[in-house]
Length: 142
Ligand code: 5GP
Ligand code: ZN
Image (cartoon, rainbow, N blue to C red; front, side):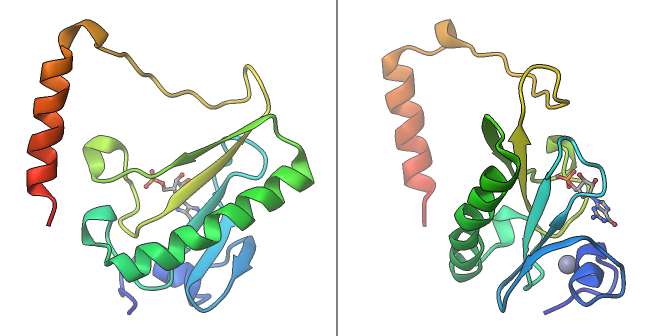
């Protein structure tokens, strides 16, 4: 299923050129046009799905099943010292292309270009709070 106005669907069908890293029946992987670090790759399902909320388990399964081998290839070839996987969902969480994608970002050390702000609130939640939150989420799982 391809969406007419989706740039990633256009990349899959070749209407927009890309630097292809890997392709099979289920996924397409290509270099992000704005490389955070060398080898920054996007892995996308061939089935158009807006983001993680709309992703059927079968599409998620096939997508994530391919991520380790692509990540390992980047590791072998460029010898990064670490690697981050990132998936943004909805605009407030920095999603800018609305076709599900996993960023694979190899890391080369301080100043390599990757930055992710992260403030923890360790004092704000007691262990009872954590149990309660876990229960509430669990009750929402269908
Ligand atoms: P998001 O911000 O949605 O998590 O990530 C979308 C990514 O797609 C961005 O990092 C952006 O650089 C990349 N991108 C947007 N348009 C194109 C394009 O036409 N070609 C390629 N290769 N990457 C793109
Ligand atoms: Zn699409």
